[in-house]
Amino acid sequence: MMSSSQRELHTTSSLPARAWVAGAVVCSVIIFTTVSLDAQLGDLTFTELPDEVGTFSSKLPNTPEAREAGKQIYMKRCMPCHGINGDGNGPVADTLNPRPRDFTRGLFKLRTTAWKDAPTEADHFRTVTRGIPGTAMPAFRAFLSEQERWQVIYFERAFFTDKFPPDHQAKEVSLPSEPANNADSLAKGKAFFQEKLVCWTCHGREGRGDGLQAMILKDDWGNPIRPRNLTKGWQYKGGSSAKDIYLRITTGLNGTPMSSDWAKSLSDEERWHLAHYVKSLQKPLKLGEVVLKSRFIKKEIPLNPTDPLWDQAVPLDVSLSGQVHVAPRDENPSVDLVTVRSLFNDKEVGFLLEWDDRTKDIKNDEVPPPTPVSTETAKTEGEAKLPYPTYPVLYPPSKDNRFVPYNFRDAVLIQFPVKLTGSSEKPHFFLGDGSHPVNLWYWMADKNEDAQANPVEDQNANGYKSPAKVQPPDSQDVTGKGQFSNGHWRVVMKRALTTKNAADDIQFQRGKLIPIAFHVWDGTNGETGLQRSISSWTFFLLEEPTPVSVYVYTTAGIILAAGLEFWAIRRVRRSSRKE
Image (cartoon, rainbow, N blue to C red):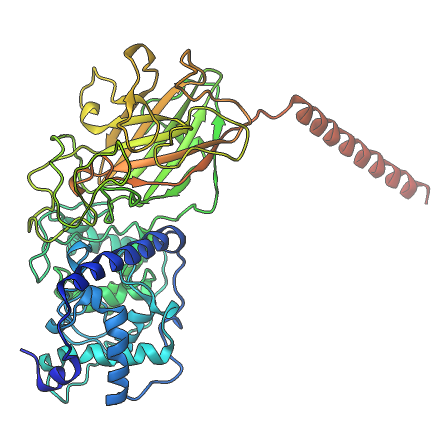
């Protein structure tokens, strides 16, 4: 039930059904476009936010006028997700993962206050300002002024005032001084993570969120919840610095299985050690480069993903986002990053692809029939007329898994243009187009289990409207092998530099920039068919050999410089003797 003050603040006329539907579709487009762009341009190129981000120059008084202004902002900016009544049941809530916060329960993850306590007003302001990475909650510092942010949080806080006494003042936990972050601190933190607190049972031995409990956890609302992949610092909801991690360990995350009880057996200093260790698990990103450089070796390209030869290749991190261009879409992809390396010799070229995945999926059920939830139909002739879910509903269809009982394979795909035109013109980055076909190397986890089978199919595509065509057996020149360990896939694919099927296969040339893109499927996440993570085009380059003349000139220069130096020294010594 809402208090009288809440009714005063939140009374509003009911919206027509058509308005709700239209609002859901429009808001979903806006939200998912923002999330996709944020994932590619913001989150994955993240740096730790300085402490001053989320602070304020002056605090606006909490007055009826401020709350009324906040109501107008809330209805425009927040209601589609959090709902008119603040219960997390907005028009687009069922399509978001994780589900929007239910303010009425008074349970907030990101706080500087004790377990089950309310966030301070400063905590609330900080969250609205900085946003929450890995969710649909954007950083509103880009959309709202400081005054507007205060107004909207005063309105939102009225949703949960009845959960705490009228005179309740949330108090921040103390933040003791931080000890040195050194090898000794990391060793102690690792012992807490692996042994004393057994954090790995949820977060996994290497922190990838693949622990024994990972797939059965639920939040306080009964929704499935996955433990954080601690190697992905860009997805830390409350910040990725050691200070932020210390606060999450100390205060816990209300509404989740991550309770502060886990840390009560640790002293302040010991919690810092644990924070330092968790911080050390974060993957250092290598983004910004746009060219994957293949390194020349004289040995055979290894098919084993863990062969030490792959350490000689320079890695490139490529960001991925959900395929949201055509139905059926995937606004909640599992894989947002793939790391790629490449080696080549005089005969063949190989690629090592690595990405995180909580589960090894080696089954592949038939694709279920499309569900007409929020649908769109084909607008052009020849396109399938079946209704697909434009924005898949996550809660339900099931409280345990959104696609139960279906099981789909894990998979990865490398995409090249069939022809290199020598111009800036490229095929469409999603499976090419009618005028610009693409060559696909498609690796499948289920076929990888058969030691006698080749888990890679050599395919071609002319756009998403038609299924990719598998090349005939005598043209299947790509081989591959995958290995799964501790929530991490490593997959190698390799092929001869040139093939007999020049009409359908990319032909590799040294020193030439070749467009390359990547697609990844996580079966447990319900990804199959067009529902996948995709990258845009980047470039691939077989490095040119260093000309012999470079070595000759360099050696001659060294000899000449040494000779001149020897001559100068002898001359100085002769002059000294004469004197």
